[in-house]
Amino acid sequence: MKITIFGGGGFIGSTIADRLLKDGHQLRIFERPRVEPYRQFLDGERVEWLTGDLMSVHDVSSAIDDVDVILHLVSTTLPKNSNDDPIYDVQSNLVATLQLLNAMVAKQVRKIVFISSGGTVYGNPVYLPIDEKHPTEPRVSYGITKLAIEKYLLMYQELHGINANILRVANPFGERQRVETAQGAVGVFLSKAIQNQPIEIWGDGSVTRDYLYVSDVAEAFALAVNYEGTNSVFNISSGVGTSLNDMIVLLEKVLGREVIRHYQPGRPFDVPISVLDNSLARQELGWEPKVRIEDGIVKTAAWMRKVLNK
Image 1: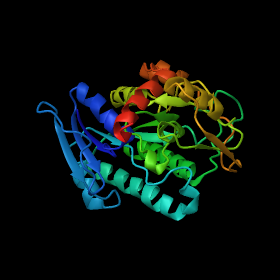
Image 2 (image 1 turned 90 degrees about the horizontal axis):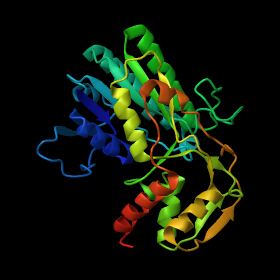
Image 3 (image 1 turned 90 degrees about the vertical axis):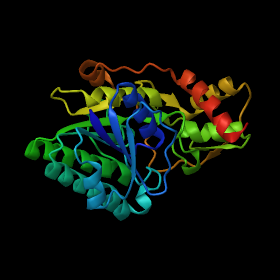
């Protein structure tokens, strides 16, 4: 298949791209201007690298010309900063996605796989583990925008016959994670620990999340590309909760030494616990997480040491 990946050069996108290339797909990777390819592609790998603006109708229309499937992985905000400028969040993510959907209708592209946020769209849990039928009450603009995009995807599916698959990914971590933007607790904590810098923990360390190694995320997208069933929304998660304090213990075990930790006052938007039920993805996609969190930390630490020259 010919697939356009919006955001295919980033932390998650590049891992998905590499996974899809193993299946022999032809890729068109769309990234921001001045973003260079994350690696040199082999002669047998069919990859076209494009740069442009997701807000540009012209750029987006050109990027999806004559493709079979679109993967939408772009987000201009993070959960922790999205409330600072919700108007920007909506304009750069929701409006841009609507323009993409209109371009899909015009170009007759019939399938899209969208990365949503299993960590933010549900809000405070009413019950655990959280399944796809759980109420959605996001507490940050990031989650509200993700949920709004989901609703529009389903509307376009109903009105225009676009097959929309929405993957609500838990808390991914792994190689190529951008630690400089505080993208994910595992990456940030590891970076600090390897450099012998103190780790800041918001609250008492009991905040619990569902962490998932990035190769497992990529496998879910590879399966979703070929999915032809009737379900649209899937939790992609480990199904296991790990607190920040437990995370520190794991890091110390992997690194073989104690790390410095500083506890700060808790943040009002942090949901105390989020653990997702991945049963539907197992049943419908034939997917399951394969990398244990400790093994994933070992892999990530080895990569990060190379990056940091430590």
